[in-house]
Structure formats: C-alpha cells, structure tokens
Length: 446
Image 1 (tube, rainbow, N blue to C red):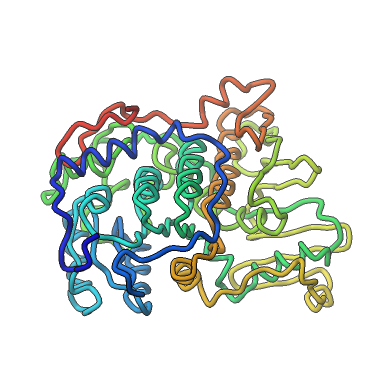
Image 2 (cartoon, rainbow, N blue to C red):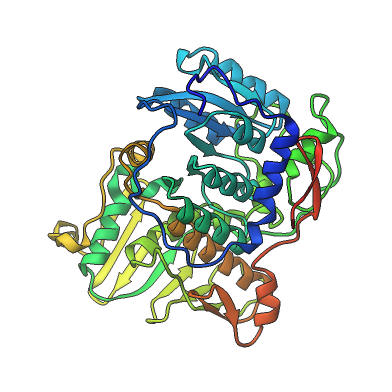
C-alpha cells in the first residue's frame, strides 16, 4: 500500500467507475445472515496510529462532523467527496485552514474517492439514498465506516450494508449517537428497562415525525455551478428526476434539506428521528438483531400517527409523536429525551443496575469509533443494529403506505400472510437500471 498520504493510487476514472459498478451490482444480492467478524484485529494501512480519513458528502451535518474529526487525535483528513461544486469548495476552504487537512484532496463523488484515495476510514454523510453504495464499497475495500443514520433508504439496502460490514470485519459505526451522548439519558433509560426497574415492558411510545410521501416537486433550472453530470451523481441509483433545490440546495446551506421527506430518497421524519428514538427502544429491549413481527396501522386512513409495531412477546412499539421515548412497564414508566430523564417514581432512577443490564459508556460517538478502529473492538452502534432500526422505520412507513395489517418475519426479513406480495415489493424502491457515474454508464443491477 502507498504509505505517503500526499499521494493517491494511480487509478483512472474508468477504474473508479468499475468500482462503482461492483458496489452497485451486488446491493440486492448479498446473502442474509453472515456472521460478524467482531473483534478482528485491524492494522492501519500506513503501519502507524494515524487514521487517514475521507468524508463523503458535505452539508450541515457533515460540517459539524468535519469540525469534530479535525479535532480528533490521531486523524488526518485526506479526502473530501461532494457532488455540488459550491459545497465541495466550501469544505476545502475550511479544511485548508487546518494542518490536519493539508493532504486533503477533493473528489466529485465518494466512489471515486474510495477507488483512488489511500484511506483507512470513511465518514458517509450523504442523503440516505446514497448510503448503501458508498458503505458497501468501503467495506469491500476494508475501509472502516462511520455512516450517518438512518443507515439505509430500504430494507434490502440495509441488509446489504450489514452483511458487507459483517463479512469485512471493519469497525462500522452508525451515527445513532443517542447511545453514547446527550447526558447519558438514553443509556440510563435503556439500562433501567433491561434491569427490570419498571417491571415487564408492555409498550413503548416513540415520538417522531411523519411517514414519507411521494416526491412531486416541479423541475427547476440547474444552478449555474452544477452540470447535468453533477445532478446525475447526486441522484445516483435513485429514480431519475429533474433538479429541484428542495432536494439539493443551491450552494452551501445552513439547514437540513427536505429530501428526507420523500420516499424516493429517504424515510420521512418517521425515519429521520426514528433512527434515533426507535434505536433506543430496540437497544433497551435487547432487539439489536431482531425486530417486531406485526404492523398495525391506525384505523383512520388519513392518520399519520398511531401505528403499532408488535413484537412476538406482545410488547407494542407505538408511533405517537409527543415524547421522545416512553417505556411503560407493569411497575411504572420511564421517559427519556435529549434534555431529560424522568420516571413515574423518582426512586426508579436510583435503582441499582445489575451488571448484566449495564451498557457501554464511551466518551462520545466519534471516540468510540476511533477506539474500535485502533483496538479491534465492536462499536456501540454496529451496522446490524442500524439496519434493524432502519427496518423498524421502514416497516412503519410501509404500514402507513398500504394501510393494512401486515405480518413480518424478522429472521427471514420478509412479509408473510395477507398482503405479503404487495408489501414485499416495498422492501426495495424503484431505482435506475443505469446511471452516469464518474463519466461512464453504470449498470446498477449488474
């Protein structure tokens, strides 16, 4: 391997395109159930403790993460990939002010960077529809991954990511930082639930936003600094459509864009914050490798709250909208949010937690990932857990879309019984058979 971070591999754009093809072609076909290589020792490519990092995507979340990683000890930024020229330049201007980014090279897309840069690790902060192709390719190249939540746009994409991470043994961290940050409110709530401090859990209320809707945005002219090829890269393998600034803001922006509202690209507010709050429910209930088996939509066909997800043991997970996470048990309740932890009886919060119910306490989410890279240990939010949480969000979205009770097999990851044929088609979403990546036509289905 190349040991000089100032140099990149001599791989042309045609080779980069072939890498994109390899990643894309296998996304729907990776097998379910690969055993994770947890704890596999990892050696950084340059034989030192310096982690050579690349970042894919530069928006408001990436800006925040970039600042954190530029301060993290032992990290050197060597690549920044962003399809929008204005945002790419903004990022490079920021990076140029820090000597830890002195070797950083700009790329037009993440897969070009993965094919040509000498990376140890990558941070993926693209819109949800671009997570899978970047994450799977990184795993195949033995590059450690920090991927923003929700992990995936569809159930099939999530399974592909989780299996690729398991097969490679890379340190994979999903950006579900409520497991490690926010005053420890969520981890303490999860421990009390696991400990039995409120008795047997009967139901969990999760307060998050609306399910996704179909994208009906009108066509707008491309910004002056974006070419058709840039817009094509932004779309990736998602369904082709004309540019709209609601999806891809013009220039650098200071808000979270609304692509997340549309099922062609994401899972709505239901998945955006659900990837945080449903994640805590799954974690507390010890369901990181499983999920609910029944989906019951509300009786009102216009309702966008009230859907119930029911586990095999009868615990109900209810999409409510008022409180971040509320666990109700036979002996009381616990509520956890980013600014609070409270219980039906304050004495519950003073309960001694048994060793078997205790959870990790990393300094923060980024430190946990860096430690996992350096020490060959599992992360606090691994790919399988992120996939299962994203699946919960997608099951809820499908329930709202079809408006009928559904049965889900969390082992085989498919719908069964009445309505299964229609529901199983929604485990994936329409995507382009070909798209122009790194200057070539890429056949996404191989």
